[in-house]
Length: 182
Image (cartoon, rainbow, N blue to C red; front, side, top):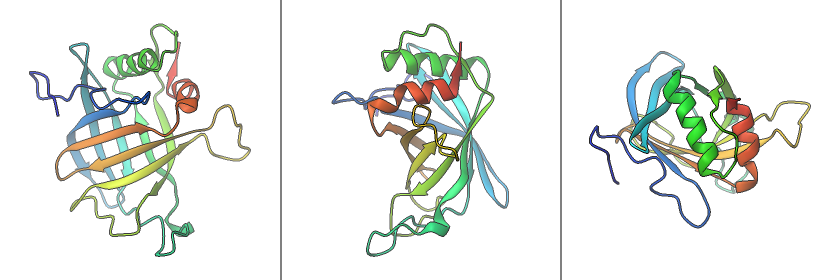
């Protein structure tokens, strides 16, 4: 992993094969009974970019031994991304540019909430090991197909990093519309 002179990962260093996959450093980790709270920071064009995260603490395995979805382990407000001001605006603008969406400077919304499911059948103790999550955005009823999007959110709190990866480039525009405004 390549870090800048402030110890922040270069935002899109693991992007390949047409996918934009982002890596962030975890800072300011706090917890309460139900949630983790932390900031995710990276470097893009020598600028600090990032956002705040609120993540449900007790996310259970998403699938049983036969790979059937465990419905009680679907967390409808399992994660939210929150703006940290200018560095979040810069992140959303950078993502739109990396996604080749010509939108100019954007401002991050104050908060966007996601449904979260762990993509594993095993223990999901965030304090002990990395947990692979799938995030679903704008998935409430009634579902509006043009607004719906998905991404992967791999949380490695013991090592202090999170990777936020694309599921499909078709979700780029809905994701940016949900997270940013002109």
